Length: 227
Image (cartoon, rainbow, N blue to C red; front, side, top):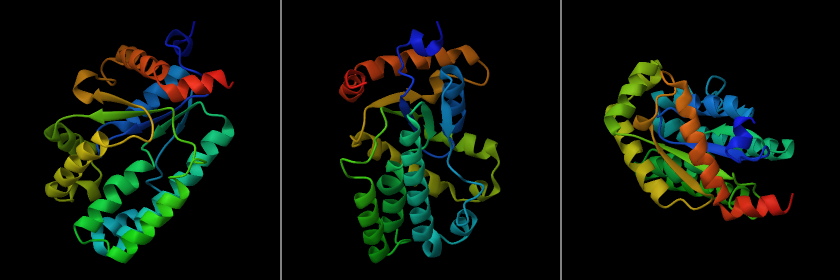
């Protein structure tokens, strides 16, 4: 029996990993995909034409960056479901509007007009009954000090040069966002409870929680009945 069967996780499941920068989304994405023999869907950071410009000038490039992310994530979500599922996704499309765009609007680094345009785009593309939502969103949580430490250890220069106040603001917004999120079922995991680098077998503890969450999801149950 493979791990997918052991923990009752369907082979067409779509699981999204969410959490603030540096919390370990990519590590968990790879570990889950390997254990379940799923495909991965990663955020396209290296090929993003706006990211470095954005870190140099938030006000000028925030709208461009958010529209780019929205378009890329929408295309990727469509591709995942057209393929038939069986994916672990690094970062959700919901975080873009619920956290990043709103943060820049609130802080004055995105104009009211740009923010309204972005929200209208997001609502038209995502907040419809036709948009394929994931079966489960895994939210990675941890202390602020631990998150900042991981950002520094990762060593991306543009992130290391970003003021700590920016990461603190994002951290608080993530906590507020997840408390009000209801687009799909949520599984919260504290990053201090597992060490996927030093203890590879800890992935099974997470898989057990994933399987349990999916089995108790009404959306997942309906999906089973219609297959």
